[in-house]
Image (cartoon, rainbow, N blue to C red; front, side, top):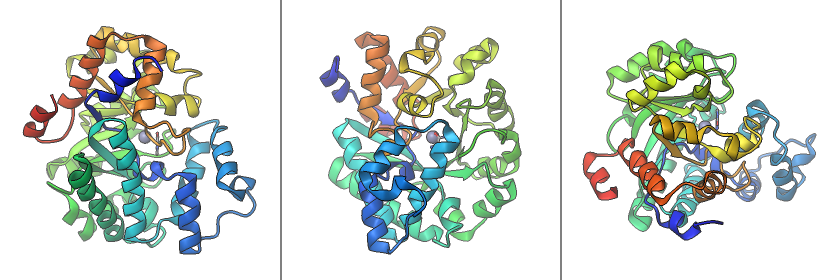
Length: 337
Ligand code: HPA
Ligand code: ZN
């Protein structure tokens, strides 16, 4: 695609990547075989990796995708499985020119299957250390709560000893909120966000993917987030858009995800030109690349270029904003800039 090598070599930061969303159909089937996990027999999508890839092309909504996402992760049982998953992602990220990655994970989706938090966290930690040592990729972990589960479930997860022990430098730096957006507004999770803020954790939340701009406002006002994941529906509220720009709130935009989940009919429909003109900071990310046509971050950059024909200066501004909006140390930011 257009300007491919220029886009490849840009110093990229990824801020919106669900590690469980990097589970390719190939790895899904091989872990299912290794771990003796029975995939659903009543869904022809699980006949083969190829059939699954075909089914993934037909998602009609976030919830349709999430059904497959939660079944997929049922094959993850051991620390080595979580390590293999994250290592697969980091290799793709390195190929795409990612230097720094802030990655989400969904502990409740594992602990509810009686896979312990330590198993999940230690597997991811090993892959992160390997990515740093062998690929030069720095990374941070962001623990996401599942908004379709009761807020009390998020709170009891947060308060587990193993979870508390994982917070801080080198471990979990922040929290997020994901899964089915409507009808679960951000304010339901105010108590756990307030506890996380008191512990010095960074705060973000998915908002304005399928839900209204009002959910973005609530995430800012009640959860006190400093980022919004997706946030494309910000365009529906000009006053809020101005506020987001003035406060330098970063949106973590996922173009191919929005197309695959039918939030927009094409990348060109995203309000990226309006965001640039209004001074809204955003980064470009892959979300769940293994579920969305294997479009890792560079493929998302290329899709944006094909749709918007940005100038090299505009690309450099996007990358600089992504570095400045990252949650790495100031020293690491200086290296990346
Ligand atoms: N939105 C909400 N929940 C998710 C997503 C997403 O894009 N990806 C994985 N869980
Ligand atoms: Zn997401």
